[in-house]
Length: 141
Image (cartoon, rainbow, N blue to C red):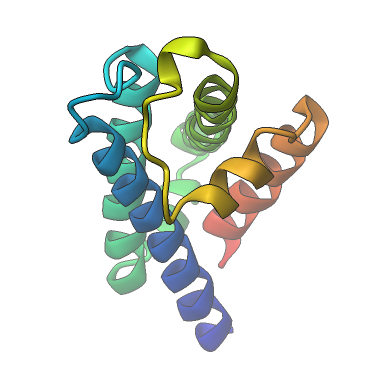
């Protein structure tokens, strides 16, 4: 179980690092008019929060500790689900904006085409399903 936990958290941290790199590359572009706004700013904050949470849980099982406290566990579980859902939802909406909005046509997305192409077509059902699976893994691994 320890190996599975370490592999999951390594993938979780790596995925959020890749997402944070994507957001940083968009923000650094001078010609990109989509580099500001609430979606990209919140995506940046949520990916950094997820990286921090993953690193902490890799060494200290904070999620398991908080999940065992009766009153806190419910709020923590729903809060974690909400954060993961928001991160994926914002990624989908921002990816769609990069492809569909005229003002975002000047944004260079080289190296992140795979991420954008696979995220922009996710439905709400799959977004919620992925969020639930990741949250369960974060709580029980």
